[in-house]
Image (cartoon, rainbow over all chains, first blue to last red; front, side, top):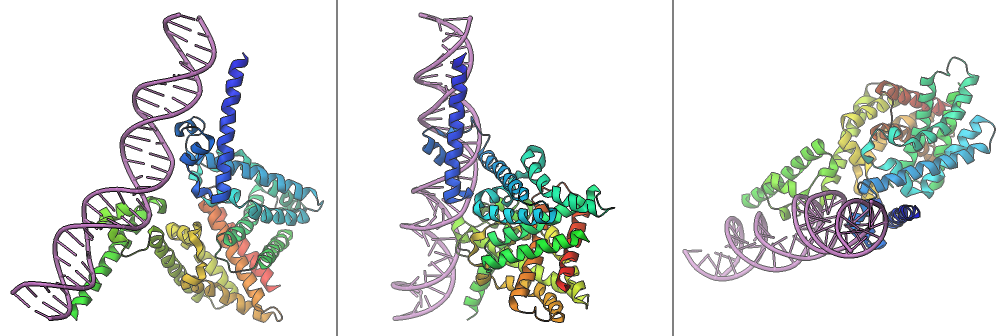
Length: 202
Length: 202
DNA sequence: CTATTTTTGCTAACGCTGTTAGGTTAATCG
DNA sequence: CGATTAACCTAACAGCGTTAGCAAAAATAG
C-alpha cells in the first residue's frame, strides 16, 4: 500500500509549502499582509487547495503562534539550565524572554498580539502550558523556602505578575510608542525583575 | 457672513455623525468590524463624503484612541486627587487604570492594542503626554525623598516599569488567554504595584 | 437677475480580500 | 475496462478601502 503513503506524503508536502511560503510573507511583510491568494500563487496551486489543509487564514497564523510557544519554551529551558539558583534562573529567563520577543517579533505578535479568536487558548494550545511551567518552576522553588506560601494561588499569582511585567514591557516597546532607548528598556526590565524577586523572597 | 458659518456647522455635524456612528459600530462589533461603507449607509451619505472628513479608516479609529487618552488621564487625575501621599496616589491610579481598561475595552485596544501605524505617537498625540505626566508626578515625589535618584533616567525608568506592569496585566487578561479569575487578577496587580512601590522607596 | 465659480455629493469603478459551490480531469480499485 | 474517488480548477459571491470624474446645487460676482 505504498500508493496511499505517497499520497499522504505529497499532501504533507503541499501543507509544508503553504506554511513555508506563509512564513516568508509574514516575516517580510507582517502578518496582516498574509493573503490566501498570494500563497496560492507562490505554491503554484489554485486557491481552494489551501482550504484542504487549513480551515481558514487564521488557522495558518495559529500554527505560527504554536511554533512560537515551542521556541520560547525551548529558549527558556536553555536559559534556566545555565543557573542552579532559582533567582538566577528567573533573571536568565526574563532575559531570554526579552531577547526572544525581539528576535522573533512576528512570532511574538502572533502569540500575544492579536485577539486570535482566543478559543480558551490553553485548551487548544498545550504548547502554552509548557511555557508556563518553565516560568513556574523557579518561583515554586523560591516559595518553598518561605513556608505558608506554596499554595497554588500564590504560585499562580506570582507567575502572572512576572509574566505581566515582561509582556508589558515588551509590548510597550513593540508598539513603538516608547521613545526610550534599548538599553534603558533593558534596565527597566532588570529593575522590575529584581523588584519581583525581592518581593518574592519576602 | 452667517452663511459660511452655517456651512461649517453643517460640515461639523456630518463629521460628528461619522464619529458617533463609528463608535456605535466599534462598541457593538469591535474595531475590526468598522466599515466605511456601513458608516456611509448609516449616516445616509455616499461613501466618498467620509473621505472629506477623514483621510482614511485608520484616522477615524485614531480619533477614538485620542479620546481614550483624554478619558484615562481624567480618571487618573480624579483617582490621584483623593490621596495626599504619593504611594497612595500610585495605588489609586493603578486601580483606576485597571478599571478604565475593562470599562473601556474598545478604547483601550485602540490606544495600545494595534500597531496603529505608530507615527511616533507622542508627536501626533499630545494626549498621551498628559497621561504620562499623571503617572510620573507621584513617582517624582517619592524619588525626591531619596536623594541622588531624581535624575530623569530614573524617573523615566520607574514610570516605564509601572506602566509595563499595568499594561502587561491588562493585556494578558484582555487577550483572554488567562484562565484566572477577576479577583485573583486584581490581587496580582495590587501585589505587583506594592512591590513596585517598595522597590521605589528603596 | 443672469453668469460664473465654488462647494458638495454622487455614481461607478479599480483592485484587492476570504471563502465556497460546482464541475472537470486524473488516478486508483474492483 | 468501467466505476469510484480523490485532486484540482474555474468562476463566482460578497465584501472591503479608496479614488477619479462628473452632475447638481449653492454662493458669489458682474
